[in-house]
Image (cartoon, rainbow, N blue to C red; front, side):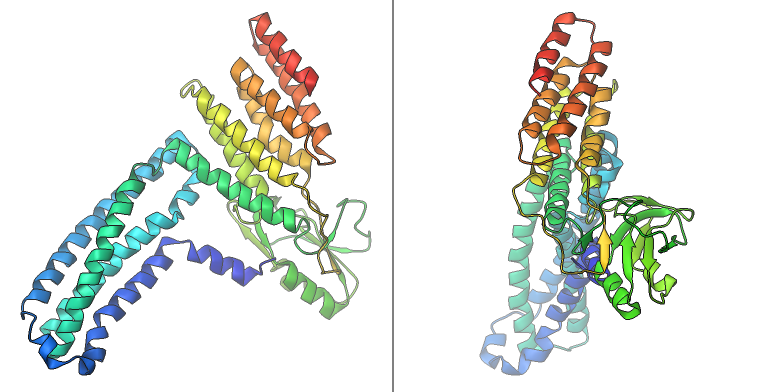
Length: 413
């Protein structure tokens, strides 16, 4: 399981400023390459290049890249607005972390800086004739790279911010989080089956200094602190759960503890994160379906599509695998419950789609599939949600034949 600083670095690497900064440094370094390598270029090569050729090309690149970057940024803002109004605001972070968009914008900014530094260096005579030849060759390569990037960008713009594309990104993020937790269901530690009964009464319970969502738990750091103090640590709040100053997030049994350092192993933020929180991706998918079922949108196809995506995400949790306890034996972490995943996935859809027979049928079929998967808790959870969804539909449906069709499907579950 990744540590706190590794998690922070991974999150920073997804931000657009990080990639843009790297490309900008690369652009500046590339522009200054000619001054460093000029002694290695034969004189007869430099004399074949016109003195104004590089200056004119760099001027065109600098002006065009500034224009294209401004246009691309406005397109990104439009995509964020479309995702907020048509999908859900919680999906915006995935669009902002889109690698293709970040690479394109970083390329444009890096090329702009490359051109600007090249023009300044040429004006000051830094390159010389040999350095000018190197700059000309590198500029040609940059132009080819820009052409390829523009073609990719044009293709990507046709999908950016669309409902299907954004929903696909949410599904991929949810699947990645589910599979990562499936491999380490207790975050590399030992299981804590019951947070109330299995925690010793004499254990000291510690609350966070602020209210927010648990975004990350550094189990490795907790284990190191437990080893130093000769203690056992019980995690009481998983990533994605709300923590407040009145409820403990961790309990410590035995040893002399540093409460501030232990609480510091929990990253508390104002919003949930997809990384260590499989339930968040499921919740965001459900939000997409709920918005599609609203009278203002009335998009049944998207609701049915989301149910299929939720089926794939939950099926990943039931993939055959041995129950893996971690090597850390002095930290105990609660498991992720199947009932919680089912509640996050289907409660809102069953409520908002109760009057729509197509949604009800797709929901009952998905629950039937989940009930047949090889997971000890899936059958009971699927039957419970099937009964609740049927009861809601029976109250909302005006046509009795529609209700009968749902009863037949629910009976199979």
